[in-house]
Length: 141
Length: 141
DNA sequence: TTCGGTGCAAAGGGTTTGCAACCTG
DNA sequence: CAGGTTGCAAACCCTTTGCACCGAA
Image 1: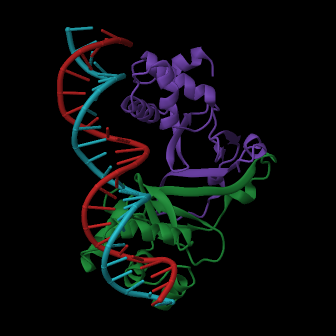
Image 2: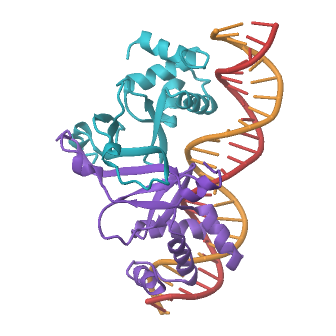
């Protein structure tokens, strides 16, 4: 995602565009993996020593509510990644060590036909966990 | 699950069988739904006023490590249910209100063929969320 | 100018840990 | 009897909130 697209996405939300938000969002979109709040703060602190946990949490929450981020739990911590620009519904393979993801071009919901008709489905989750090539080579699996 | 099976399962783990563990496990297996630590504590407090958070957390963790329980996140809280006795791999529909589950006799992994061969798969998660008949009738969806 | 964003400090909530007493196997 | 289990208290960590000031629109 380039800078123009990032700005467009942020502006199309109901959130004000502040320098810190722009930088947080840029960081998240450049990394393209699931990142914890702690990691985001560490990154931001380098450039803005006064950056606080509150702002990071508040912005991650706002971003997620606006649909700019997706969340999952990685190693016990809530982690976030930018919503994929792929315009079709899909899922991910997720590296348990570095959070890196690979697009999985399949949704199991198309195979689920025999659901209880009295159960109202509102959401689903399909994630495959493991270790990416790079982390395996480093022996981190 | 009857009392005999519960005892067998607990004994086959590496955990000692104490009255409180037995009762916690009985409660979880009778309910057959995802239950939060808080709920478990409330239930246990009725019979054992001295029951503490620590013991509930420790036992839930031990049970899960022994494979006696499965965990998911429900409404922001880690919740647990007894591992199904169904002897084949499967997944669940989960009611977002009461945690009740329905067995889903399908695993999407059999449709996943085109995985990156360099990604080492170690686990996966497939859950369908929604509202069960009873909760819908009560307007809790 | 207005309303939302931010930093600070403090509180909150869920979860974990050290320790001494207790109990299962 | 030994080693795991429990209750208590305290600590811990992540996350949220109230408030005053600042800044985007």
